[in-house]
Length: 380
Ligand code: SPD
Image 1 (cartoon, rainbow, N blue to C red):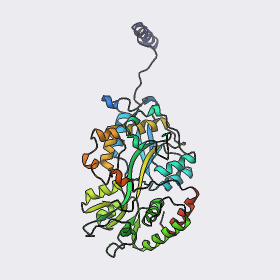
Image 2 (image 1 turned 135 degrees about the vertical axis):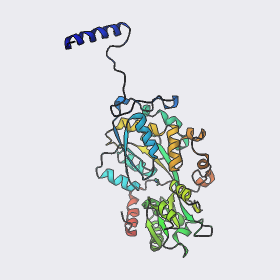
Image 3 (image 1 turned 120 degrees about the horizontal axis):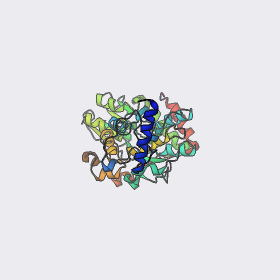
Image 4 (image 1 turned 180 degrees about the vertical axis):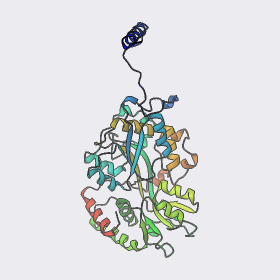
């Protein structure tokens, strides 16, 4: 049959279908070319990929190291056909500096509380379209409307935690419970300490030890904190936020300033490790999912953020990275391992939480903090 003949057949077919009520010119939405056939989805997974025709093939996530389960990324690729490419940073300040230096390729970032305030103030975040985030209903209201984004216009909660310290009870056979044990270390601890490579956290811990606010803007108080830190420095083996877990497990340090999830994972590998929320208190924080204004794939970014809030995916993530999850449905339905939910290191009591402090944007006083950090000579 020639081309004209085939065209005639096609016209006849369209006429028959139209007569039967089928719309002549509305193609069924199809997954993007690179994606596998969409699997049958359970009711809870409906609409997880939003409008597939609008999805990009790739999405660029700028995250803290080791802070998302590979399985969550694989599931997003299998279900929605989008490959997530992950790059990492080890502090809020590095994230800010990279974006301010003009890095434009990121679609989703994970700033902590006080850094959200700074980024909103600097006009760096895109407003979220809540109609693309139906899974927001699964988030515990206690984690919404916090001081840094009162209407959650720009961010949704990702994980939360505390910054205490962890020590090896096999190497230090006595109870440690104070920042004093960190800043004025006993001889068997000297030289075997690691501190976070994070200026607000480290200076904040020294301030807390001295009984000051972690958000002080007083130059006298900051001067005292600096003296504590300079005195402690010869005993510090490393300032690191991403290798502290390995150092503890390998026994290269016996005490580390550390974030909850990393501590819990270190303890899984070495049960003699113990996580401590110091009696003076420590930081409590929340990391959040946000979209930089410069993102090239905003719609896909929102679909991904929504996907991460789906209870089964939030649970996969929390069960692997072991930070506190803000996903109330995943918690109530015990999709998250009950051993984690009952661990007071991850989910401290309300009473303990009252001793903790949120970091806030200290405005221009950040220059005082920067100066201390430079004088401390922590390599970038
Ligand atoms: N392993 C990645 C942990 C990320 C923790 N973010 C904490 C920020 C606290 N200010």
